[in-house]
Length: 585
Image 1 (cartoon, one colour):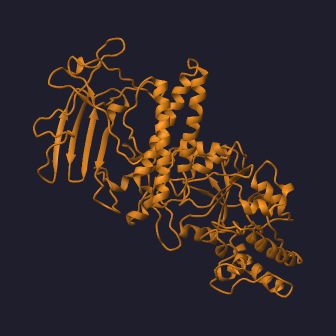
Image 2 (cartoon, rainbow, N blue to C red):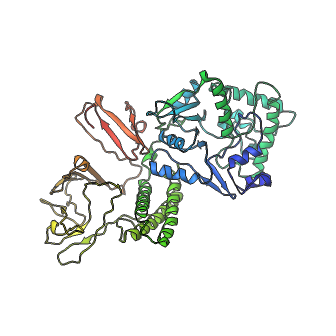
């Protein structure tokens, strides 16, 4: 940021502006086909940056929307650069489209798919939703044609040649080929010819004569020296190339590139970009590695994020419902706490945070932020509900422990509040941990506000076996099972050395009574780098099955399973997965 501030003339730095605007004013050019540096997903507010972006596979729709909303008070972008997620959801560009975004730049997609797009001149394409028959939700999308957005993979297929135009390497690092040299009158013609030759190869992947060349990388342009090295050496190259009438090149932004591309597409409707539907999962890099392990990496942190989202949503709902009866002071105290929690949750959606791909120290920092927000939001909810919430650990890496309520005879009455966050009437079973002693039936223990008995069931209802403190059988063999029956639910408990599974059927009306509820408790403390999977067996013919997983909780996408290894057929389910035939689901 200091380098940007030092390089730009003072009169070009307003109190509030987007970096996109600043760079356009600084690098004025003609028809812009080359992107020098684009920070259109960043915001500049009094010389402070605000990053907006994140993972698109294991996040959920509300979290994605919340993250987007933080961007809009600063700017209302029409172009989004999602440069580093490990694959791309088709639901996220749909949400962006609804917010006013028209264009999208992506990079990390399956290497084989990227090669096919190159051969079909589909590097720019229209991304369409399966349910969209008119194309009104199309997003014009540019996929970077090579493996990365760094300089070596920017100007063409030859990294050695591209490296000659990374002018920071004049004084820093080396190249796989000749080292870059400063551009002067003695070499400008030769270097300009080399650059144009590489760009001509890249242009073969495009239908339009408007192409995009990136120039930058992670942790670049952090020194004023590099700003001068790149800018001052490219200018004479551009002047030399622009002397002719075949190529026009200059600095610009994504907005400049898409404006020229859309102009050409409008003038040449028969050469419109192809249309694609679907998502880009799983992601395979150029080395052949499948990036699917992050779906389940470090599940503790993923759980923390979901827990915080649940609390924020409930707090928002309760605050809205009680707004008319609350004192203004209470509202003013609650809103900043929830705002801070939302910011920390949005920060956690980063593609190296919720994925679990950051260093241990960084993940611990995320965890502490999430935990602090969990405790703060929990306090807001407790004040709004005039009660205490259970099940939340006191330290960020602690274990959730549910309080045992004493319901023995002659014990004092306790008030239990259940908040229905669905906002419509439901019939379901709710669980609490109680100690009822030796006497007293369940129906005598729970009463509604009106004094009516609430049907209840005490578990475990053991037929035989020795009961330990954690309500599990004393396991004497490698596998045990236990059946618990009652008026509200029938449950089968199964236990191995590492897995404790509970399978239940509820005796209640409505959807809850039509479902099989399966809960798994798995001891992973003794294992490292171990993947655990649950297999579902049905009597349905395998050739008649259709499988679906959800896309950020917005829509279900059908998955065609072929005879491939697990890592190539691995999909997360942020909210749902479906197996069905034509008659059963």
